[in-house]
Image 1 (cartoon, one colour):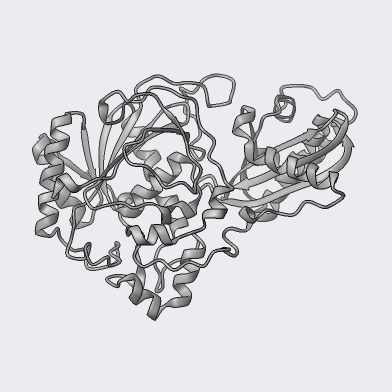
Image 2 (cartoon, one colour):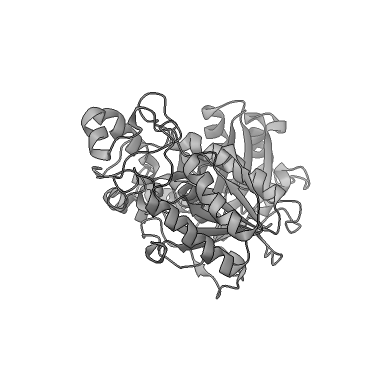
Length: 447
């Protein structure tokens, strides 16, 4: 059964006054925007506009999949409590709107959650855009960000695979990404790698390159709050309990790595090169010096298992193999350079760069499918390792997806990250839904 998140809002400049609503449908696994709705509705109250936004969001979700499970998130306590059945609906203007919203999808398919206003910025922006358009006597039109996966506005011509710096720099949807800010979560202490970090920094806009050695606190929007989340349903209160920390280690070099060839789970499964083995030994020493890793989990591919074994032997731990940490299957692109793929499969490559739903030629795995797989793996491992520091030895794409989801960044940000062989990153996951990210993307000392 499909699952969607609907975020909706409405506003009135005068209450009553010129009013409008906004609603967005999101993929809870990837964070992808699936639909946007907004409209200027003339003179109305805030509550009427909020209900109109709810109706538009539920309708958009139903149009995508009538059997979908939908989580509605709104900053209107009134609407959330009334639609959840906890508050009576007394106002005559609200009753028909609530009844209309209730008829859109079966009640069993819809749940409601209150969120603070600062967590509802996307829908709030749409509502304000609609009111601004109404003030000009115009109809609201979707912004460029709503069409990011339909038609990229900037030509893409990367020169290497996803892990290559040139590829990240060349995926220049900068104007688009700059328009999509990432809401910063609450500042709180983090314990990445088991050592206290100095405070937390607001999450940057998706257009800004990820900085090395920078702790960032950001919401993890696709994770439902656990049973330890604060009361009240919002799932965003501070949680200072020990997080589950995933230390993310990309495997050491193989013979294909310096040649910048696509190397996924459908190729030759290469072993570590001599340089890669030196990197694995060096990172094992670095992690042993920290003394915080309690469990080692590896992708099933040989290059990861060899890297994991070098670390685990140094730490005196066993290695557990996790199938969900494998690299994307690049299909017919396996073993090719970016230039070779561009020459042989130009249309497929362009489609892949334009949409996370597009798969590599020959039955490869799309980034959207990989995100669902890796999200499920993450949640399963979090449930099994609460409060522990776990080393995940994996590949370029899984690390990037885990970081992207923790930051709440859009899917196109995968092309804006560089991830060197044997580099370390970490994500600390808190029970309230927040995630703290630290990037240590420097392997010069590991060679």
